[in-house]
Length: 351
Image (cartoon, rainbow, N blue to C red; front, side, top):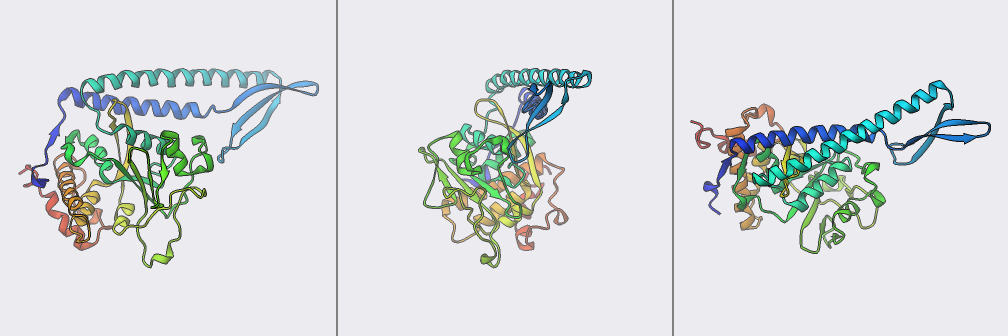
């Protein structure tokens, strides 16, 4: 792979306009969905003894259905129910309308060829987001993170360095992770979450990895610790089939780096929120990987190409992220200095 000739193409005006529209409309829909979620459960009249009582059903943080009475039927409780019903109807209508807007937007995005994120990968990321884990203990790392950097910068990079049939999930083992109750996932496990998307996903002999029938891989990885015995099994759910994260050197830099969030677009034109790691740290880590003698030569060349491409994206399009030591203290000095040329303005065509 000719790492010095990776193409980075800017979106045209029409594409940029619709990328902005997509992100704005997607955020409006997410806000509407969040408001609607506040009306999970019910508020109904219930006959008990000698009167009707207003009974509220709701779900607690553990997903357990609870009930409580708001009082006997009276003008005050009548008003409470009428207000609740009206607000729920309004929230339902708004969420539906914005969902329809996004469906129309997806058609526009397909016509403009804005779709980038592979469909299965996008579905997995959305499921992790809906489960309350994206950006709250899990980040997207590896090749799929590049789609976030592209989206934020308004560019696309050569497909030769973004095509992938796997996904790496960086698990922040400093946090206690649990799937949100709303995800309704059996046993609260990541493997069960994946099976809701594709029933063929199975944990492989490598316990940190799941694979489907087409060979798409999902890896759960945390940073390595020193000494290794300080970290026991790292997992999300308690099922015997759950993925058990495997520690990998160098990921502590990605874990400690600032999060980077952007709304990308999948192959069908639908938006997908990606929470990755800071692109400067991504590029430095990829360059470091490319120079590890034990790494597969083909992967080393791809690592170097990705490092150079992301470095150019940051330097050319993300000027608010300068390559400065004070911002990137999680990187070892040697790694920081080795990656400095990736962010050279002259090489990026700016000077």
